[in-house]
Image (cartoon, rainbow, N blue to C red; front, side, top):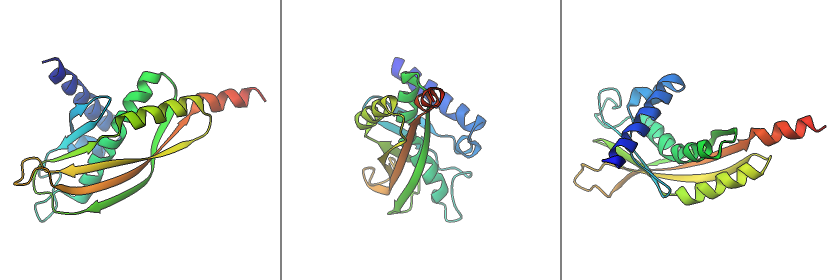
Length: 170
């Protein structure tokens, strides 16, 4: 029951962030199905808003899901650090393997690597980059483990606190 509440809270926060900062994200109605130290899973439902003219998920919606799954772990860890770290994706590569004809679940399993990366950024005044891998599947399909798309996102982080501290010491 507690896990359900946590996931419901994370979904609410993600949708609220979407409505306030990235309206397209809010429009897609993502739901967080897993968020822990190991992985992040985000589900985007196939609805009128998210599908293309052929009835499968629009590739732009697939990109939104990859952005959420790849960035949510880092965002959560940055919040925990209490440091003013800016997060942006610098680069985005996608490989669309099959039409996604149902709700799509996006999975990033690099939680521990991202945690180590955020700790590096906390200590450094330099902008740092890391490649984050995300896979998309359609869990209700005949082959639920089949990957329908793969994404490589370059996560770029910078500790703004250390930058401002170095400018004031000059």
